[in-house]
Image 1 (tube, one colour):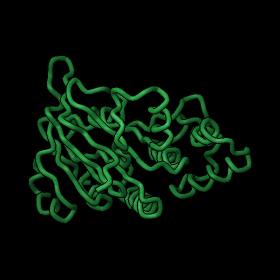
Image 2 (cartoon, one colour; image 1 turned 120 degrees about the horizontal axis):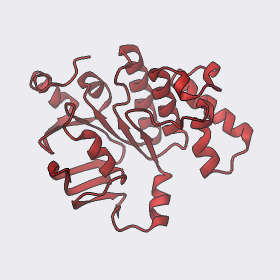
Image 3 (cartoon, one colour; image 1 turned 135 degrees about the vertical axis):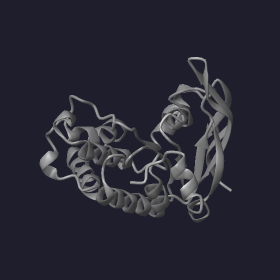
Image 4 (cartoon, helix red, strand yellow; image 1 turned 90 degrees about the vertical axis):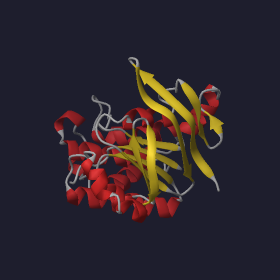
Length: 244
């Protein structure tokens, strides 16, 4: 099995509190894995550790066999070009237009001409239903829904092998959820990309993921295919996950 992402006995403490405790996890190439957990369960911290934005106190994280804690700056930079990120608050650059936010990775990492950049950006924004009328608006002028969909377009702009998604649909509503799930599933199948989804929204995880893990007390306490985990929906809802 081709493992793209692996956590080995990862532990992390914050202000004396143990957030993650000996967590083990693998993401095979071409799979979509959703990690479910209620607010405060450490999902976002886990995503930052798995993506290399935080280092664990103990254990290790490997992407494509590379240990993030010991890799050279050059190796990490080469890996990051192959990774797309969507953070919970969209994390768009506040003083740049929506268009320029989505175009930024292309302008920074490729030698494409401006006409090619415009074509690529327009294509990705259209996938997520971001109208061209928003091109020149800065993030603060737009709704959370538009910002999140623009962040998704930016995450796919370099056609990465690995996607990290932190609550990409929270607060967007069922129609947007279905659109995003459809686009991401299509991208996974076309590019054989691997996707790690962090979410508190059970229905979205079921619609998108191949496998689902439940995060509790710093560990993945249950895992299985979407169908296997569907039978646990009542138990998961009782733990406080969203029914929306």
